[in-house]
Structures are given as structure tokens and as C-alpha cells.
Length: 451
Image 1 (cartoon, rainbow, N blue to C red):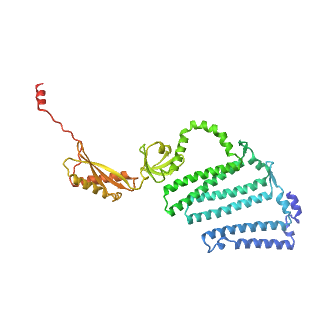
Image 2 (image 1 turned 30 degrees about the vertical axis):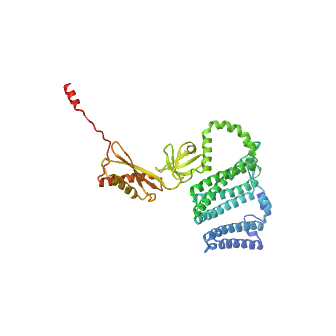
Image 3 (image 1 turned 90 degrees about the vertical axis):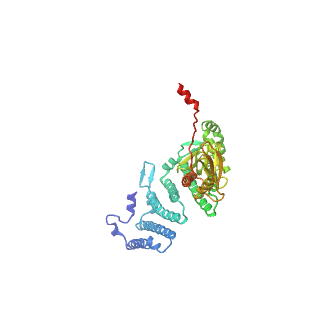
């Protein structure tokens, strides 16, 4: 093929360049001049000078595209000037790989152009998303995933073109049947399509979450309730996406569910606890009794702040700054105290005993002062003291106080106890310890002495 092309060119021997006529020299010179001018005047820094950041990114990308288009166009023109039959030159295979895949100049040309487009597009999308993430203030991890998704989309489109150009060998590879679901053949191509759709849905949901959270913050809405609403929205979007994907590849959802009913019943006995968690998660989400940000206390003496409410498990941040993964059935089957459910103000107490003979009014005054000296204790409702009982060894009092932040209330109780001890020492109020009086009868010694 190459020999036939060479024979069609005008005396392309070792001195073929000297055998060109005047017009061909002129055309080649104009091509070189045009190529040089195109690269000089399409310099990215020249086109983008003085432009805004977003416009600069676009102009730099445009400059590289212009360079590529001009270079390819001039190369084709040069081949035409040299007398090549472009259709035959680009369409005739140069080599065949594995006896199945013909590799023609046009196929190699599309590979080079495709790689060039991938490189240019990657630079553009990387700069664009980086500037967009700074401007609109969304997570850089999401920005990276957006860039990967865009690159993956372009790669799949170019890959589809290359597969068609490569012939039936690679196309057959992606169309080979792996297994079947309800008489629908599942091929590698369908798996790639399904994974791409699901990846796009996951990325789209993350973007929606960023926009939704920003809207909630700007409107001053309750973050806990808003996150619960978004969780329901997220699961609804996933269900719709899965149904759409299965339907698009030809799988009948109704038939699939019916054929899987017996299997689900059998599995239900083995994973009953798992289903229990999922059902409990739906109950928690729909009833809204527990929301993100609430401080809860479970019957198992676990106290913490709810960080996330999922469909199967929830995440709770304990007072030790440890994230606990709690199955959702604990919120339904166990007794749960939601300290944040009613209102922000919550009452707590500290117990203390003083020795008999102490001035009880002074004790009351000192206890109230100890509470009010803490910045976490609110003034309204005011702290108050109850004289609870005459104990075996002490006069028992209980100090009640109100706080708005209940998460670290144990630290606050400790601070109040330290203050109480200091004030009692200062005013000589004694905190007694348990005492027992032993009375000996006089006849006991006489009996022991006789023995």
C-alpha cells in the first residue's frame, strides 16, 4: 500500500523535495508560514491577557484547540499538495493486529486527535472546576469527582468511536453475553453503561446536597430537619435512578420483583435483623423524632449527638469525641431520651449533703451562687434548691439549674461541684461522711469481767 502511494507521488526518491514544482514550493511555504502565525497569534498568554479568571480559562483552552485544528488542517493540505490520495491513504489499513483489528492512518489519526482532546479538555475542566469551587465554595473532593466524570464521559465517547473504527473484533468483545436476567443478555457494554449511570447519579446527588445545604443555611432553616428531608429525597432519587437504569437496558421491574419474591422470603429469615434496621430507619426518618444535631441518650447508657441518620445505621458523636455506628432498631425498640426534642432549655441537678447543725439558708444561698457563676447556666428559669430530706448522716439538698447546651453537661456538673466545695470551705459548711454511734451497756463489762 505504501509503495503504491509513493509511486503516485512525483519522483519521491532521495531528492524528492528538489523535484517539486514552483507552485508546490509556494504552497508548502504558505503552509509553514500559516502554521507559525497560528501558533504565534494563538499563544494562550496573549489571548488571555487582561481577561477575568473564568474567561481566561476559556480563552486558553480555545487557543490550544485553534492550534490543534490549524495544525491538522495544514497537515492535510500538505499531503494533498504532495499528491497523495487522502481517501485511499487514510482508509487503507497499514497493519492488522491479531488478524482482526485493522489499523489505518485514519484510525491512528483519530487516536492522536482523541488524546490531544483529552489533554486539552482535562486542562480546561481542571482549571474551570478549580475556579468554580473557589467562587461557589463547594467541596474540592466534589470538584475532583466532577472532573473525573467529565473526563470519563469524553473517554467513553471517543472510545465508542475508536471501537467502531477498529472493526468487529472489539465490538464483539463488548457485546459478548456474560449472563442473563429475565431473558435480557447482560454484556460488558451494558455493565459499563450501568456503572457510568450510577456513578453519575451518585455525583449528581452530592452536588444537589451541596446546593440544598447552602440554601438551608441561607434561609436559616433547621439543619436537623433539613438533613432528614434530604435523606428521604436521596433514597427516592436512588430508587428512581435504579428503576430507570434497569428499564433502559430492557429489564422488566415487575417481573424481576415477582421472580425474586421467593428468594427474598428465604433470605428474610437469615437477615431478619438487617431488614429490621432498614424498617426502623424508615420509621425514624418519616416520624422525625430523631434528627441530625439532636442530643440523645439510649437505654444502653450511650449519650451523644446525632451526626447522621441513615437507612440502616446512624452515626452518633459521643462525649469522648468518638463516632459510634448505631443500628437503627435501637431507636425504635429501646427507650430513648431526646434531650433536644422539646426545646433547647433542659434542667439538670446536683445533689449535696451538709452536716446537721448547718445554716440551711446559707447552704441554699451558696448553692445558687455556685450555679450562677457558671457561664453555661442560664438565668431564666433561675436555679433553685430543694431541701430533700433529713438523711442518716446529713441534711440532703438538690440544686436545680437550666442549660441550653446539654452535650457537655457532665463537665458543667463537675465545675459546679468544685465551686460548691470551695464555697463550703470558705463559709465552714461541713460535708459529712457516713457515721455510726456505738452505745455499750454498763452490764456488758461486768459480765465480761466475771468470765
